[in-house]
Image (cartoon, rainbow, N blue to C red):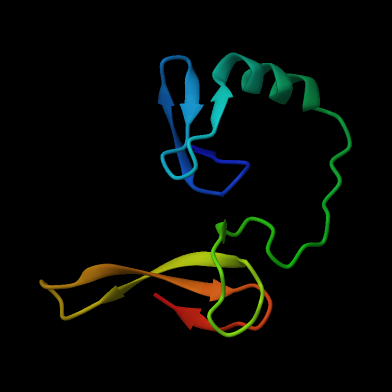
Length: 98
């Protein structure tokens, strides 16, 4: 499973590339495999970032001037009639909205 380096969405293989349906980023599959094989055995450095690995998107917060939010989903409803609900959480003030 591949994740988009731009928005964190799951990427799908399509015509020799991994394709992100959210932001339309494409990553060449052969290059990605080559990069991974070259990285094996090398030192890995992790950067401390409070939003690393989260699905951040450009979305203006209604509470503050920040333009970045984490896209989240939750299940709402009663069993048998439950739906996935998408919402956003501001990376600065923590406000949530749909």
